[in-house]
Image (cartoon, rainbow, N blue to C red; front, side, top):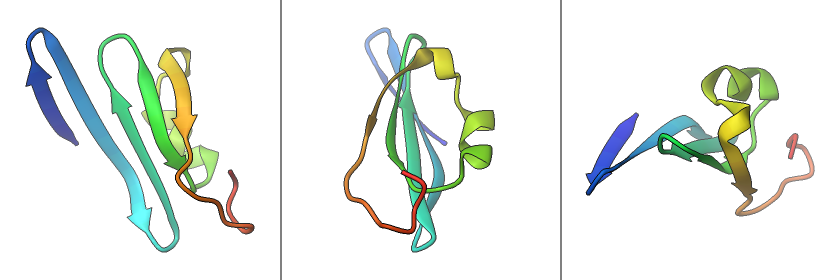
Amino acid sequence: MEKWKRGDVMLMLKTLSSSSKGNCHIIEDDNCSIMLDCGIDAKYILPNINVSKLKGIFITHKHSLRPC
């Protein structure tokens, strides 16, 4: 997990997967989260994200064999 601070805002980047088997990154602050790709099974994503803070999912590309 990487963290950046700009003024009063702390951003965190969680890399859940970055490989040929699937990509999934979560960018979040105290108020919201945005998912970058969701190419892994939800059972690995859900324990790492507060769904009530999720504001969007940015999909960079798709594969016919991936969940999203």
